[in-house]
Image 1 (cartoon, rainbow, N blue to C red):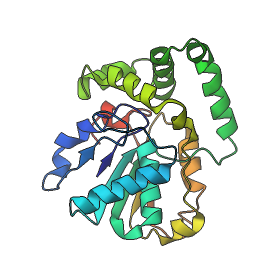
Image 2: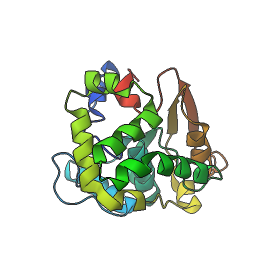
Image 3: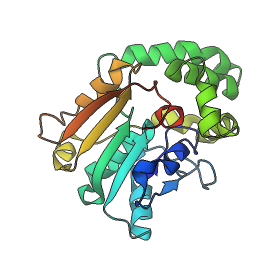
Image 4: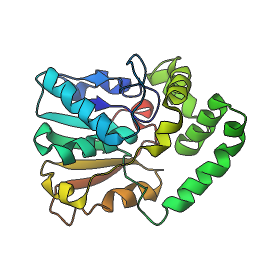
Length: 232
């Protein structure tokens, strides 16, 4: 199951043609309120996780390997924390939860300062552009358009507009007790230029301490747009 991030519903599309997945049934869906899916994006990440569980059950694909990017990585962990039997393994592409770590305040303040001007003007396109420049570098659109398609940025703007005020409210609510229940392999994949906060946020839940099979891989890829940037 491929779970896209906070915007750009087709963001996981580059993984669909990877030779490594030959022989697997790949499920690439748009979360509620994104892309071609109807409704409004939910305010709670647990709702996204429940949607994913119901989708897997409907497709008779339980248990499944869960692969999520950014917010999608947190959704995968949330799903496995709530229903451990759903997951064969978890791959979180830059999905570390930075909300609970000491550096989170600095990260939030940096984003808030950068996005203040476009948001005050109601410039969603400008705000998304600034966000992606911060997260994935000044040339992010090259890889994004090459691998996802020329429509990718416009799709992200539409997704961001539909998400509206709910997006910042979504919180990763898995508890340490739920983390203990996750016994499948868990992998956090970060890029060579990724902010250390990604790994710091992932470690906050103590997966290592609970004996879960955790592997933190630093790949020579890029920062946040990992599925769009290179072969994984």
